[in-house]
Image (cartoon, rainbow, N blue to C red):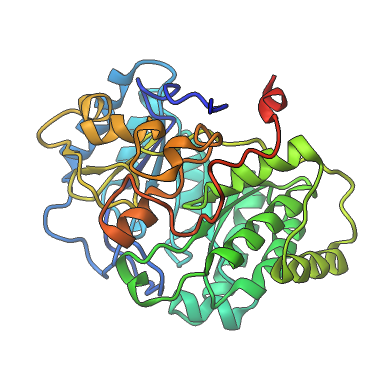
Length: 381
């Protein structure tokens, strides 16, 4: 069965490089991938190594990848302003993903904007202080996030909101969505919990709930929100099916979330969903840790190199693991024969977390790979 996707689109360069600039962070989020700590950890790239890494990105050639500066808390990176200036001078676009703390000031945000920063992503995991603050581990985190959104809006800086879906907050999603609309946020990135880092003890959703939440996200996109998912590429399969059939129905969770959304926001004016993504772990995406280790993504802890030993360009283009991740037809799972695998290759991180095989089945996917409901190839013509 032929796939509609293009496995080889991102062979030469990623579109996004996620750089964990530091492990240091003052929050204590229950789902944190990074096991963030108060202070920088031994082995963190020093200022000169950091600048050399920035300069090496030009070897990818144009168009240069976009760099996402994260952590820990990127605001605790000692030479953040120097890194920002270097990225700007090299013509490399970048965004930051800070923690919602007092380190995010008007002065610093204006400085970064003046030095090329294109956007800021903030986390919002609940529609109320009670839920969000509990997840973030700090009282007042919700209000601080609201204040920072307002500050960035005043400065004319684009804001993206990230939300991690877990059992603790599934009922909060429509409230989060309403906040985003009220704050005129246009991009929502929704993470589906993978049991790594501090999230190892948390309970993930079962496949039925995951499917329902993804279907609701497609519905939510009808309101004009650009919605993307992380570690839930089945969102794209649902998008494609909807685009081909015009049908969108689900189970109890879907219907409940949909009803709350309509009650809060009214019925959507459109039936058009967000653009369908084509990147995944190792394919258009790469992650660089605080100590220079390189991984296919922040949630897939399979080391493929270290920028202290090889260039990021060489690692991205020649790593055997990375090359295999770009070709789902060679996976050891049902994804290998699935017609959707050019857009949805399954969550590689979740497969690895379950059985140590990054090329195995995504336990959250209950789709029959041999069953193709629609001739959806014309959707993308």
